[in-house]
Length: 307
Image (cartoon, rainbow, N blue to C red; front, side):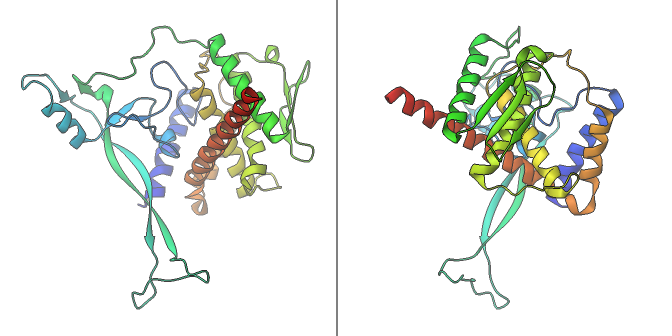
């Protein structure tokens, strides 16, 4: 089984579990207090890309790092991996120099060494599965979307729209949400038309995710059901969930369940033999879109404050 097949299998199993239990499926676990993304316990850095879909919003540590930490504690400190704890994969990309049949490094027409890419993984433990390992981000007892969170997110959305010269229309009635690339316009119903703030900002962020096509020159399919079309929808949805997590927009458990057709559609897409890499590619593109959104918004906010 290839690394891409391992990733697909994990997400397919999550989709099947959601379908079986009749629960809402999220590509990324919604923020529920504590850290808002998977983090390295040792470095505090966020795991990105496909790791956001594979790992919980928690802190993770390698066995070696855990043993190193244990050495810094008193000998009788009760630090141990709980029985039944599972090792979890963290995926990462690397590069290598391409060689010809005779073992010579391949140089392109510009004199640059041609590079190839590979995807590998190493294993970690969830901090919650380790006795005696304190959290850097203790979970909050009451988790809710605050005015501070929504104001900050709205500020970033407005700054991004100014930077990209996108107009956002908040309409009184109707239910359609869309991004129109021909006139740089996003249309969404006002927040009052949604069942929760999470639903509103998730829908708005989804369309913003689509709008990053312009700045990132992302390929998108024009026909419904095509591979590029499906990938773009996945990019926008993963982007939306990253945004909601980052700005701590809490998921409302009363949210309606996914339509079974939604889950079945993605099961069919991911099970297709030639789609093995689609999920990993989409997660990577969603990560790039998120970074693009943050950079454009912060640049505009910085310029506005300096003026």
